[in-house]
Image (cartoon, rainbow, N blue to C red; front, side, top):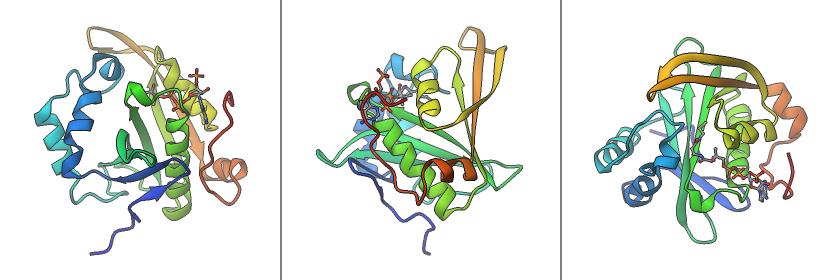
Length: 199
Ligand SMILES: CC(C)(COP(=O)(O)OP(=O)(O)OC[C@H]1O[C@@H](n2cnc3c(N)ncnc32)[C@H](O)[C@@H]1OP(=O)(O)O)[C@@H](O)C(=O)NCCC(=O)NCCS
């Protein structure tokens, strides 16, 4: 059966491709780090979690209501996996998706997250034709908030201490971006490498 996902998506420095069995070592090595897990939905991430994630993604498709579609972020120059990103299709509205991303600390600060999500946004709005994408970040995770602002997301909400999470009252930002907003910002699509220092 053919897939709506072209596998891979490519940008100047990166490939976004489906997770595959050989990704286990790289995936586990950065997702298991406390500084990576700190604002994420997991407490710990070991080999069993890695195997489950890769297995669960083996036949996944973007746009299935209520599911995440996870992709490996691969550095083209070294062919190594440096992170992952995911698209969640809302159960209540197929025209909207949520995005999430994780980079290995060794590959943060290079603009890779901006470039990977730019590429993914072109796919979601261009190929899939979705109306809106949202992202939820911990209010104490400035790198994540900066990333979404840099991509043109609007901050739509600040939930203050609205949930008990990992042992404390947690605050979160919600960001949103519409298809027409992305098209105005990125006419014709095509993920770009933003100049260093760009906000
Ligand atoms: C959120 C996360 C992906 C952001 O990563 P990041 O490396 O800060 O984001 P980018 O890869 O886009 O890099 C941007 C930084 O690189 C710099 N940079 C260098 N070259 C660049 C380029 N060509 N284009 C854009 N930025 C560039 C920017 O100036 C910016 O630096 P600054 O943080 O000092 O301002 C990362 O912090 C992470 O994986 N955290 C752990 C997981 C997590 O919390 N995820 C959020 C869930 S939604």
